[in-house]
Length: 88
Image 1: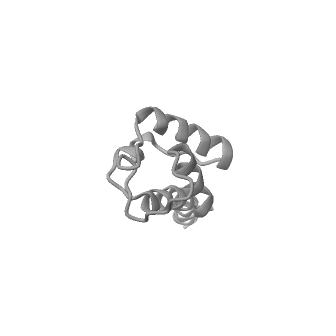
Image 2 (image 1 turned 90 degrees about the vertical axis):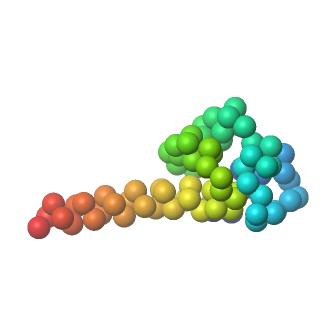
Protein backbone atom coordinates (compact mmCIF):
# COMPACT_ATOMS: atom_id res chain seq x y z
CA UNK A 1 0.00 0.00 0.00
CA UNK A 2 2.89 2.35 0.72
CA UNK A 3 3.95 2.26 -2.93
CA UNK A 4 0.39 3.15 -4.00
CA UNK A 5 0.30 6.06 -1.55
CA UNK A 6 3.67 7.32 -2.84
CA UNK A 7 2.37 7.06 -6.42
CA UNK A 8 -0.74 9.08 -5.52
CA UNK A 9 1.36 11.80 -3.86
CA UNK A 10 3.78 11.90 -6.80
CA UNK A 11 0.90 12.15 -9.28
CA UNK A 12 -0.75 14.99 -7.34
CA UNK A 13 2.58 16.85 -7.32
CA UNK A 14 3.29 16.17 -11.00
CA UNK A 15 6.38 14.09 -10.21
CA UNK A 16 5.88 11.15 -12.56
CA UNK A 17 9.17 9.43 -13.26
CA UNK A 18 11.03 10.89 -10.28
CA UNK A 19 11.63 9.03 -7.06
CA UNK A 20 13.93 11.13 -4.91
CA UNK A 21 13.74 9.63 -1.40
CA UNK A 22 15.00 12.87 0.17
CA UNK A 23 12.53 15.27 -1.47
CA UNK A 24 10.08 16.92 0.92
CA UNK A 25 6.46 17.75 0.17
CA UNK A 26 7.09 21.51 -0.08
CA UNK A 27 10.31 21.09 -2.08
CA UNK A 28 8.28 19.02 -4.55
CA UNK A 29 5.88 21.92 -5.01
CA UNK A 30 3.23 20.86 -2.52
CA UNK A 31 0.90 23.46 -1.06
CA UNK A 32 -2.20 23.60 1.12
CA UNK A 33 -4.64 23.15 -1.78
CA UNK A 34 -2.82 20.01 -2.94
CA UNK A 35 -2.80 18.75 0.66
CA UNK A 36 -6.60 19.10 0.82
CA UNK A 37 -6.87 17.23 -2.48
CA UNK A 38 -4.59 14.45 -1.21
CA UNK A 39 -6.49 14.06 2.07
CA UNK A 40 -9.68 13.55 0.04
CA UNK A 41 -8.03 11.11 -2.37
CA UNK A 42 -6.47 9.09 0.45
CA UNK A 43 -9.87 8.83 2.11
CA UNK A 44 -11.77 8.00 -1.10
CA UNK A 45 -9.22 5.71 -2.75
CA UNK A 46 -7.73 3.91 0.26
CA UNK A 47 -10.12 4.52 3.14
CA UNK A 48 -7.36 6.33 5.05
CA UNK A 49 -8.20 9.25 7.32
CA UNK A 50 -5.10 11.42 7.30
CA UNK A 51 -4.84 14.69 9.24
CA UNK A 52 -3.98 17.59 6.97
CA UNK A 53 -1.33 18.66 9.48
CA UNK A 54 0.79 15.73 8.32
CA UNK A 55 1.45 17.67 5.11
CA UNK A 56 2.77 20.64 7.11
CA UNK A 57 5.61 18.63 8.62
CA UNK A 58 9.07 18.64 7.06
CA UNK A 59 9.02 15.01 5.97
CA UNK A 60 10.43 13.37 2.90
CA UNK A 61 7.80 12.02 0.54
CA UNK A 62 8.85 8.47 1.43
CA UNK A 63 8.56 9.13 5.17
CA UNK A 64 5.20 10.81 4.63
CA UNK A 65 3.90 7.72 2.79
CA UNK A 66 5.24 5.47 5.57
CA UNK A 67 3.50 7.54 8.24
CA UNK A 68 0.23 7.58 6.31
CA UNK A 69 0.20 3.79 6.06
CA UNK A 70 1.53 3.28 9.60
CA UNK A 71 -1.09 5.60 11.07
CA UNK A 72 -3.80 3.39 9.67
CA UNK A 73 -2.07 0.24 10.94
CA UNK A 74 -1.44 1.90 14.29
CA UNK A 75 -5.12 2.69 14.79
CA UNK A 76 -5.98 -1.01 14.60
CA UNK A 77 -3.15 -1.87 17.02
CA UNK A 78 -4.32 0.72 19.52
CA UNK A 79 -7.89 -0.56 19.36
CA UNK A 80 -6.68 -4.12 19.93
CA UNK A 81 -4.56 -3.02 22.89
CA UNK A 82 -7.42 -1.09 24.46
CA UNK A 83 -9.76 -4.06 24.01
CA UNK A 84 -7.20 -6.29 25.73
CA UNK A 85 -6.98 -3.96 28.74
CA UNK A 86 -10.77 -3.64 28.98
CA UNK A 87 -11.12 -7.43 28.97
CA UNK A 88 -8.89 -7.79 32.06
